[in-house]
Image (cartoon, rainbow, N blue to C red; front, top):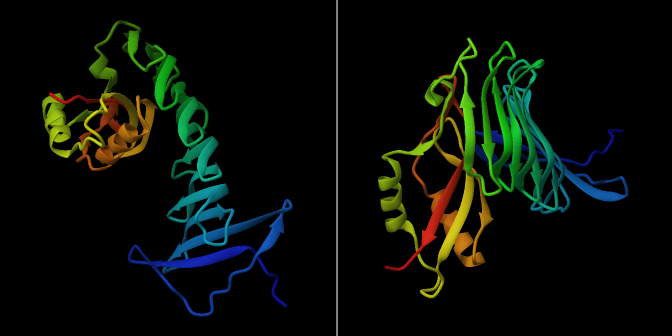
Amino acid sequence: MAQKSDTLVTYNFGGAEAKKENVNVYKINRRDTLAWVKTTADKNFVLLKKETFADEQLKNHHGSYQEFLNGKLFIHGHYSKNAKTGKWIVYDSLGNRAQEIHFQNNKIDGPFKSYYDKDHIQHQGSFNQGLKTGEWKIFYPNEQLAAKELYNATGDLTDSIYLDQNNQPAAKKNILTEPIFKGGNVKFYKFLGKTLRFPEPSLTGKVICSATVNTDGRLSNIEIFSSPNDMLSQEAIRVLKLSPPWFPGTLFGKLTAMQAKIIINFVIN
Protein backbone atom coordinates (compact mmCIF):
# COMPACT_ATOMS: atom_id res chain seq x y z
CA MET A 1 0.00 0.00 0.00
CA ALA A 2 1.48 3.32 -1.06
CA GLN A 3 2.10 5.87 1.64
CA LYS A 4 0.09 9.05 1.33
CA SER A 5 1.93 12.36 1.25
CA ASP A 6 0.86 15.98 1.51
CA THR A 7 2.13 16.80 -1.96
CA LEU A 8 0.16 18.14 -4.92
CA VAL A 9 2.09 17.43 -8.13
CA THR A 10 1.57 19.70 -11.14
CA TYR A 11 3.14 19.52 -14.58
CA ASN A 12 4.53 22.33 -16.69
CA PHE A 13 4.54 22.08 -20.49
CA GLY A 14 5.95 25.01 -22.42
CA GLY A 15 5.63 27.28 -19.41
CA ALA A 16 1.89 26.63 -18.92
CA GLU A 17 0.56 24.50 -16.12
CA ALA A 18 -1.30 21.42 -17.41
CA LYS A 19 -3.71 19.05 -15.74
CA LYS A 20 -2.88 15.38 -15.52
CA GLU A 21 -5.46 12.66 -15.03
CA ASN A 22 -5.47 10.66 -11.83
CA VAL A 23 -3.35 13.17 -9.91
CA ASN A 24 -4.09 12.56 -6.24
CA VAL A 25 -4.01 15.17 -3.52
CA TYR A 26 -3.29 14.02 0.01
CA LYS A 27 -3.09 15.82 3.35
CA ILE A 28 -1.23 15.04 6.51
CA ASN A 29 -0.88 16.85 9.83
CA ARG A 30 2.61 18.25 10.16
CA ARG A 31 3.66 19.68 13.51
CA ASP A 32 -0.03 19.75 14.45
CA THR A 33 -0.86 22.07 11.57
CA LEU A 34 -2.25 21.31 8.15
CA ALA A 35 0.34 21.81 5.40
CA TRP A 36 0.03 21.45 1.64
CA VAL A 37 3.11 21.12 -0.56
CA LYS A 38 2.88 21.84 -4.28
CA THR A 39 5.64 20.29 -6.36
CA THR A 40 6.04 21.55 -9.94
CA ALA A 41 8.09 19.70 -12.57
CA ASP A 42 8.66 20.09 -16.30
CA LYS A 43 7.70 17.51 -18.93
CA ASN A 44 10.82 15.50 -18.10
CA PHE A 45 9.87 15.46 -14.41
CA VAL A 46 12.77 17.76 -13.54
CA LEU A 47 11.90 19.73 -10.41
CA LEU A 48 11.07 23.42 -10.81
CA LYS A 49 9.49 24.37 -7.47
CA LYS A 50 8.42 23.08 -4.09
CA GLU A 51 6.02 25.39 -2.26
CA THR A 52 4.32 24.98 1.11
CA PHE A 53 0.83 26.40 1.66
CA ALA A 54 -1.46 26.80 4.64
CA ASP A 55 -4.65 26.21 2.65
CA GLU A 56 -6.12 23.63 0.33
CA GLN A 57 -6.64 26.29 -2.36
CA LEU A 58 -2.87 26.88 -2.48
CA LYS A 59 -3.27 30.65 -2.10
CA ASN A 60 -1.36 31.31 1.13
CA HIS A 61 2.34 30.48 1.20
CA HIS A 62 3.36 29.36 4.67
CA GLY A 63 6.52 27.36 5.27
CA SER A 64 9.40 26.20 3.11
CA TYR A 65 9.85 27.47 -0.47
CA GLN A 66 12.33 26.07 -3.00
CA GLU A 67 13.14 26.82 -6.63
CA PHE A 68 15.30 24.60 -8.81
CA LEU A 69 17.42 25.34 -11.89
CA ASN A 70 18.38 22.40 -14.10
CA GLY A 71 17.21 20.13 -11.32
CA LYS A 72 19.50 21.71 -8.70
CA LEU A 73 18.42 23.81 -5.74
CA PHE A 74 18.57 27.48 -6.76
CA ILE A 75 16.57 29.40 -4.12
CA HIS A 76 15.52 28.33 -0.63
CA GLY A 77 13.56 30.38 1.89
CA HIS A 78 10.44 30.50 4.03
CA TYR A 79 7.09 32.24 4.04
CA SER A 80 4.98 33.21 7.02
CA LYS A 81 1.36 34.05 6.24
CA ASN A 82 2.15 34.73 2.58
CA ALA A 83 5.14 36.98 3.35
CA LYS A 84 8.81 36.17 2.86
CA THR A 85 10.56 35.93 6.20
CA GLY A 86 13.98 35.12 7.62
CA LYS A 87 17.02 34.06 5.61
CA TRP A 88 16.69 33.29 1.91
CA ILE A 89 19.60 31.67 0.10
CA VAL A 90 20.45 31.77 -3.61
CA TYR A 91 22.78 29.00 -4.81
CA ASP A 92 25.17 28.88 -7.76
CA SER A 93 25.42 26.03 -10.28
CA LEU A 94 27.91 24.21 -8.04
CA GLY A 95 25.57 24.25 -5.07
CA ASN A 96 27.51 26.92 -3.19
CA ARG A 97 25.82 29.90 -1.57
CA ALA A 98 25.79 32.84 -3.96
CA GLN A 99 23.65 35.20 -1.84
CA GLU A 100 22.11 35.38 1.61
CA ILE A 101 19.18 37.78 1.89
CA HIS A 102 17.02 38.42 4.95
CA PHE A 103 13.34 39.32 4.77
CA GLN A 104 10.88 40.67 7.31
CA ASN A 105 7.20 40.78 6.40
CA ASN A 106 8.02 40.45 2.69
CA LYS A 107 10.60 43.26 2.72
CA ILE A 108 14.36 42.87 2.35
CA ASP A 109 15.46 43.70 5.87
CA GLY A 110 18.62 42.69 7.71
CA PRO A 111 22.07 41.33 6.77
CA PHE A 112 23.00 40.69 3.14
CA LYS A 113 25.97 38.77 1.72
CA SER A 114 27.04 37.71 -1.75
CA TYR A 115 29.84 35.24 -2.40
CA TYR A 116 32.45 34.44 -5.03
CA ASP A 117 32.46 30.87 -3.72
CA LYS A 118 31.72 29.12 -0.43
CA ASP A 119 34.74 30.67 1.31
CA HIS A 120 35.03 34.20 -0.12
CA ILE A 121 32.60 37.09 0.42
CA GLN A 122 32.08 39.52 -2.44
CA HIS A 123 29.63 42.06 -1.02
CA GLN A 124 28.13 42.54 2.44
CA GLY A 125 25.96 45.02 4.31
CA SER A 126 22.47 45.49 5.73
CA PHE A 127 19.07 46.57 4.46
CA ASN A 128 16.35 48.48 6.29
CA GLN A 129 12.96 47.90 4.66
CA GLY A 130 14.51 47.45 1.25
CA LEU A 131 17.06 50.28 1.43
CA LYS A 132 20.77 50.00 2.15
CA THR A 133 21.76 51.20 5.60
CA GLY A 134 24.98 51.52 7.58
CA GLU A 135 28.32 50.22 6.33
CA TRP A 136 28.64 48.21 3.12
CA LYS A 137 31.83 46.54 1.91
CA ILE A 138 32.94 45.06 -1.40
CA PHE A 139 35.92 42.70 -1.64
CA TYR A 140 38.19 41.43 -4.39
CA PRO A 141 38.41 37.63 -4.78
CA ASN A 142 41.62 37.67 -2.69
CA GLU A 143 39.59 39.17 0.20
CA GLN A 144 41.22 42.60 -0.23
CA LEU A 145 38.87 45.54 0.36
CA ALA A 146 37.63 47.12 -2.88
CA ALA A 147 35.05 49.57 -1.53
CA LYS A 148 33.45 50.85 1.63
CA GLU A 149 30.20 52.81 1.55
CA LEU A 150 28.12 54.41 4.30
CA TYR A 151 24.36 54.87 3.99
CA ASN A 152 22.03 56.84 6.24
CA ALA A 153 18.66 55.73 7.60
CA THR A 154 16.84 56.72 4.40
CA GLY A 155 19.18 54.83 2.07
CA ASP A 156 21.28 57.77 0.87
CA LEU A 157 25.01 57.32 0.30
CA THR A 158 26.82 59.68 2.69
CA ASP A 159 30.47 58.58 2.41
CA SER A 160 32.53 56.17 0.34
CA ILE A 161 35.99 55.01 -0.66
CA TYR A 162 36.98 52.84 -3.63
CA LEU A 163 40.33 51.09 -3.93
CA ASP A 164 42.24 49.30 -6.68
CA GLN A 165 44.16 46.08 -6.06
CA ASN A 166 47.23 48.10 -5.09
CA ASN A 167 45.18 49.65 -2.28
CA GLN A 168 45.17 53.01 -4.06
CA PRO A 169 42.09 55.21 -4.57
CA ALA A 170 40.07 54.19 -7.62
CA ALA A 171 37.11 55.56 -9.56
CA LYS A 172 33.77 54.16 -8.45
CA LYS A 173 32.93 53.06 -12.00
CA ASN A 174 35.93 50.73 -11.94
CA ILE A 175 34.36 48.90 -9.00
CA LEU A 176 30.62 49.22 -9.56
CA THR A 177 27.98 51.07 -11.52
CA GLU A 178 24.46 51.54 -10.26
CA PRO A 179 21.30 50.65 -12.21
CA ILE A 180 19.67 53.48 -14.11
CA PHE A 181 16.51 53.92 -16.15
CA LYS A 182 17.27 53.79 -19.88
CA GLY A 183 17.51 57.41 -20.94
CA GLY A 184 18.24 58.62 -17.43
CA ASN A 185 16.04 60.61 -15.08
CA VAL A 186 14.51 62.73 -17.85
CA LYS A 187 13.08 59.65 -19.60
CA PHE A 188 12.03 58.17 -16.25
CA TYR A 189 10.02 61.28 -15.37
CA LYS A 190 8.40 61.19 -18.82
CA PHE A 191 7.45 57.56 -18.20
CA LEU A 192 5.95 58.52 -14.84
CA GLY A 193 4.07 61.44 -16.37
CA LYS A 194 2.41 59.15 -18.93
CA THR A 195 1.71 56.27 -16.57
CA LEU A 196 0.88 57.71 -13.14
CA ARG A 197 -2.75 58.06 -12.15
CA PHE A 198 -3.69 60.12 -9.12
CA PRO A 199 -6.02 58.06 -6.90
CA GLU A 200 -7.58 61.33 -5.72
CA PRO A 201 -6.69 64.91 -6.71
CA SER A 202 -6.21 65.86 -3.07
CA LEU A 203 -3.62 63.13 -2.45
CA THR A 204 -0.08 64.38 -2.96
CA GLY A 205 3.32 63.62 -1.50
CA LYS A 206 6.55 61.69 -1.89
CA VAL A 207 6.68 57.89 -2.03
CA ILE A 208 10.11 56.35 -1.43
CA CYS A 209 10.43 52.90 -2.97
CA SER A 210 13.10 50.27 -3.39
CA ALA A 211 13.34 47.62 -6.07
CA THR A 212 15.75 45.00 -7.31
CA VAL A 213 17.01 45.75 -10.82
CA ASN A 214 17.81 42.30 -12.18
CA THR A 215 20.50 41.47 -14.74
CA ASP A 216 17.89 41.63 -17.52
CA GLY A 217 16.94 45.14 -16.37
CA ARG A 218 13.52 44.19 -15.07
CA LEU A 219 12.30 45.26 -11.63
CA SER A 220 11.33 42.88 -8.83
CA ASN A 221 10.97 43.00 -5.03
CA ILE A 222 9.25 46.39 -5.30
CA GLU A 223 8.79 47.72 -1.78
CA ILE A 224 7.59 50.91 -0.09
CA PHE A 225 9.96 52.47 2.42
CA SER A 226 7.81 55.49 3.25
CA SER A 227 4.60 56.99 1.91
CA PRO A 228 2.01 59.54 3.04
CA ASN A 229 -0.90 57.37 1.93
CA ASP A 230 -1.63 53.70 1.12
CA MET A 231 -3.38 54.63 -2.12
CA LEU A 232 -0.25 56.44 -3.32
CA SER A 233 1.83 53.41 -2.31
CA GLN A 234 -0.31 51.07 -4.40
CA GLU A 235 -0.16 53.41 -7.39
CA ALA A 236 3.64 53.64 -7.12
CA ILE A 237 3.90 49.85 -7.06
CA ARG A 238 1.53 49.54 -10.03
CA VAL A 239 3.56 51.97 -12.11
CA LEU A 240 6.92 50.41 -11.28
CA LYS A 241 5.57 47.00 -12.29
CA LEU A 242 4.90 48.55 -15.72
CA SER A 243 8.40 50.00 -16.01
CA PRO A 244 10.39 49.06 -19.11
CA PRO A 245 13.78 47.43 -18.48
CA TRP A 246 16.54 49.49 -16.87
CA PHE A 247 20.28 49.38 -17.45
CA PRO A 248 21.36 46.92 -14.73
CA GLY A 249 24.15 47.59 -12.27
CA THR A 250 27.61 46.08 -12.58
CA LEU A 251 30.19 44.83 -10.10
CA PHE A 252 33.75 44.51 -11.38
CA GLY A 253 32.38 44.85 -14.92
CA LYS A 254 29.82 42.05 -14.64
CA LEU A 255 26.07 42.54 -14.65
CA THR A 256 24.59 41.98 -11.20
CA ALA A 257 21.19 42.29 -9.56
CA MET A 258 21.22 45.42 -7.42
CA GLN A 259 18.81 47.38 -5.22
CA ALA A 260 17.74 50.83 -6.37
CA LYS A 261 16.12 53.62 -4.38
CA ILE A 262 13.30 55.17 -6.38
CA ILE A 263 11.45 58.34 -5.37
CA ILE A 264 8.07 59.13 -6.91
CA ASN A 265 6.58 62.57 -6.26
CA PHE A 266 2.82 62.87 -6.58
CA VAL A 267 2.48 66.58 -7.35
CA ILE A 268 -0.21 68.34 -9.37
CA ASN A 269 1.16 71.33 -11.27
